[in-house]
Image 1 (spheres, helix red, strand yellow):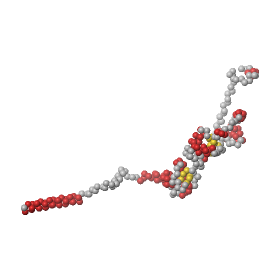
Image 2 (tube, rainbow, N blue to C red; image 1 turned 60 degrees about the horizontal axis):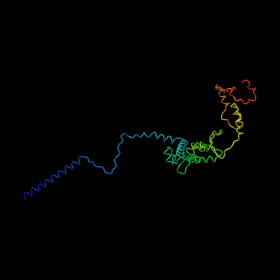
Image 3 (cartoon, helix red, strand yellow; image 1 turned 60 degrees about the vertical axis):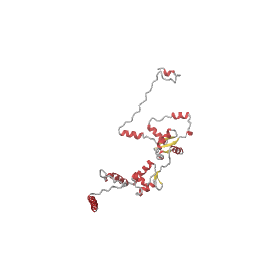
Image 4 (spheres, helix red, strand yellow; image 1 turned 45 degrees about the horizontal axis):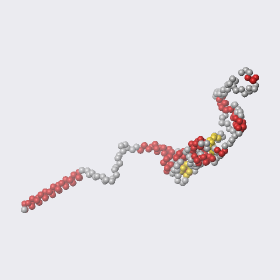
Length: 280
């Protein structure tokens, strides 16, 4: 029994020695190799490096453009802002205008004060918007405005009321609702209401009298008659002819009308005088 006990104890000591050696070898290997730690599951992945390095000069052109706008005269910057407000017909804050046009209203007191007091700009304390002389939203309101101006309304007063106002004027003209005429003195177009109740019946005698008026054959005489009646002629024939003589340009001669002879097919109105037609 003593020999068996001694052998079992010896085997146990051998096993302990082998486990000790294995642990020592493992600790030695861990100190010589680099350690690799697994990243946490929820850790953000590192951004991939760009294939080409970022060039900071790519934005130079835009920065130069911004600099040129902000160094331009106040009038030029105001024009940019008003064009933005006119085209969009929306209200913008100073920051939104800066983003759209690069005009720094908050940093330029002269531009800010000019816009706030501009007749074409409405400022409510925080936003800027376009302001036309007549606040119109469509064709119906435009027609009501024209009907309220029986003496005529200059188109320049309403052409910026909303983007399609000129197209609506042409549509109203085609529908017979308004008249579009040109003022000879001011050289501007005027719109007049066409009231169907104001139709005037003209006598036939007056029509014949008007059609029977013989106009002068020379344009100079026509211009003189217009001036006598307080109207400004659209042409200046005297000046044009004088310039033509200086440059050696001969005026075009009017072709003479070929006199038509009497034939058998001519309708005779004086048949009671047969002696006039003996040669036929």
